[in-house]
Image (cartoon, rainbow, N blue to C red; front, side, top):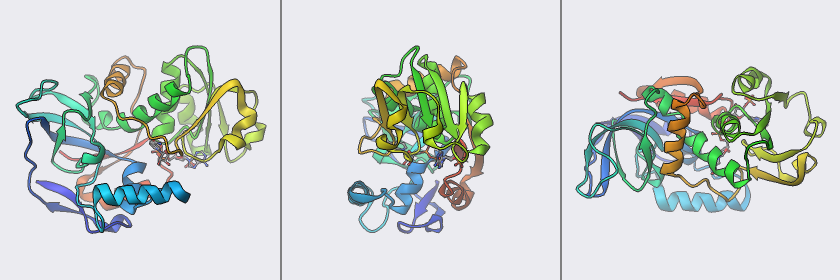
Length: 307
Ligand SMILES: NC(=O)c1ccc[n+]([C@@H]2O[C@H](COP(=O)([O-])OP(=O)(O)OC[C@H]3O[C@@H](n4cnc5c(N)ncnc54)[C@H](OP(=O)(O)O)[C@@H]3O)[C@@H](O)[C@H]2O)c1
């Protein structure tokens, strides 16, 4: 089968598409014929062995080398995929051949390939009935992260929520998830993302290039930094009494959950969540796609079309 392979850790040029052996499955695994995958910030950071700054980054690098490969990645990259189940192991009861699913591969990886074998304990759910495979591939990364952090911070009906950085994969999902949980949402985005943030349901949108944090009006029950750019100290004047602050730039990693993926499918089918696709690339254009995501400027998700 065709799959992306990496010659080492580094820039987009370490990647290429090669012919590799099709995976076989164990008794508790499923084999998915991959139709589309999303290329996320997590994938490019993994490719570049970029764990972030400071002690957290240092620890992340060691963890990546231990789990993915000491000198070069030993696994096919890609962590979020959608496709059709074509084979299930003898002990699998959750899925059957023919099911259309979306999944987070976790440290199994392997999304950028024609076939991906995953243990059925991974975060996997039936894809939304009304979504194309390409749309479905955009839901899990940002949606799972947003559900995890926003729920943990107590987002609920009637709460006022500020989403800082509302246009990336996490931010565009967080805006919609906060609305879905019943909150009133104020968003902060760049000039190119203000229209998108309004379309996704923000009551008010600030342009971070024009309005410094200390000029944002009011206080919020939840301040969620969806891009890892503002600390709790910077945002302290925006957090209401008994309010919560959450950030993606933390040692806390969103738990990948089948229940959350199923909820995201439900939200999509109910019209409460839309897929925000910035660009779609063919598998052969994986290097170019990585360059685009590396820019840090994408709006929503980048999709890799596999089949
Ligand atoms: N802890 C966890 O479990 C977890 C899970 C998932 C992701 N993350 C982290 O979350 C971060 C965001 O991930 P992502 O996939 O959403 O990234 P992404 O899609 O690559 O984010 C790109 C977006 O960020 C916006 N942006 C960049 N700088 C900004 C700033 N200073 N203020 C406001 N917006 C800004 C850009 O808008 P402009 O071009 O308009 O600036 C662009 O739309 C990453 O650092 C990732 O590692 C953590």
